[in-house]
Structures are given as structure tokens and as C-alpha cells.
Amino acid sequence: MKIAKKIFETARSENRSFVLENEAKEIMRAYGIPVPPFDTATTADEAVEKSKEIGFPVVLKILSKDILHKSDAGGVKVNLRTEDEVREAFQTIMENARKYGEEHGIDVDLSRGVFVSKFADEGTEVIIGVTRDPQFGHAIMFGLGGIFVEVLKDVTFRLIPLTESDAREMIREIKAAKILDGIRGQPPRDTDALVKVILAVSKMVEENPEIRELDCNPTFVYEKGNGALVVDARILIDV
Ligand code: ADP
Ligand code: MG
Image (cartoon, rainbow, N blue to C red; front, side):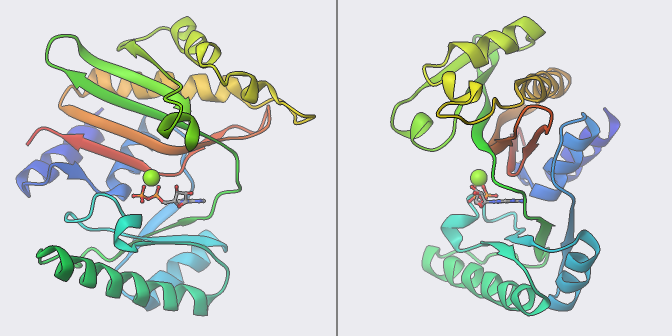
């Protein structure tokens, strides 16, 4: 896909080893991966304007080539419901990012401002990741978010490219698979939408082997029929 190549080229020309969230989400959208509506803003006023266009509630996140893990830098503010909250969040995020730079001895580039996006309804959290092995090539990882992946390591892998039945098997074979079926009276989750996201990620990586690592963490999966949304996207590339 042309848009992906163009974005990766720009990143490389600026000596960046990862693409910014707006770039990652643009690429994903081009591959048919559902993401919440988003835009970018470099001033508080602009952040307010973009929030109004997108519709409240929104989230603001730092957009900087020097910050890969945005929360660690105090760079994420969620569920902002008013213009004042957006204005304040913008100032706080910029201030936090500047302090983070000071503490880590880096001159953080703040010129890109923030990523503004619709605050997504809570869904079942899953993670889709991609790593690249020098011998085996790209592999895709799937698991449920939070403690399932971090503590229980309840994840599964397949080599890319994968087929639809591979994707279906992946979401069946984790230990916590039942959670997606809906436990304790909860309705089943939209596993068809999830399969589509996994296959689209596989296609995206297959067509762009310069992707070194990728993380859709978290991805929210909703009730059957209501789809899935990738709410954070990180893409690392060869420089
Ligand atoms: P990072 O992983 O770089 O710290 P994220 O983009 O994952 O940053 O944001 C941190 C957390 O904020 C996410 O794990 C998620 O819980 C929440 N979040 C981020 N974006 C959204 C969104 N659009 N809608 C709802 N929650 C979000
Ligand atoms: Mg994240």
C-alpha cells in the first residue's frame, strides 16, 4: 500500500525508528483496521477545535519521536469531556513530556503536539503483536490484555502470513478463550471482527517487511455485532 511506504519513508528520512500514532493509525485505516476517529493538534486551541470536530469525550496523547511509551511520560489523558478539560490536558501533557525529557537527559521534540482521538467505550482488552525473527521471519502474537499477557503469559503465536483458520485457531487456543465467549452472563464478543483485525495486521506486515515490531495494545473487542477497535498502535521499523 502506497500510504504505508510513504509514511515509512518519511520516518526513515527523519531517522525515526518508529512511526507516530497518527501515522500508524493512518496505515492501519488504509488496511481496513478499525481505529477511533483521530486528528492532531499543536496548540491547546487547536486541540479544542479538533475535539469538537471529533466529538466528546476524547483522549489526548503526546506525539513525539522521543517518546515511545506515552503513559510512562505522563503523556496520555483519557475521557476528556469538556473544552476546559482538553485545554488543561494539553498543557499538562506538554509539561509532563518536557519534565520527562529533563529527567532522562533528552531534549524531547514537542513540535508535533498531541494526538486527539475519540475516547472509545470500554471493551474486552486484547493484544495483537508482531515480532521479527532473523531466522523465521515475522510472527504474530495474540492474547487477552492486562494480567493475561503480563502475568500469565497466556499468548499464542503464528508465522505470517496466516490464513483465516489460523486466526480463528489463535483466538480459540489461549487458555482464557472462554472470556471471549462471554462468561458470567456476559454476551459473547465479536470474534469475527477480531479475526478480521488479525488478518489485516498479517497482510500489512506481509506487504511491509521493514516492520520490525508492532503492537496493537490495547485493542478493544465489543459484543458480537459491535466490532473491535485498535486504540493504541505502535509500529517500529528498520532505519
Ligand atoms: P501507551 O501504551 O503508549 O502508554 P496508550 O495509547 O496505550 O499509550 O494509552 C494508555 C491507555 O489509555 C490505554 O491502555 C487505554 O486504556 C487508554 N486509551 C488510550 N487511547 C484510548 C482511546 N482512544 N479510548 C479509550 N481508551 C484509550
Ligand atoms: Mg498502549
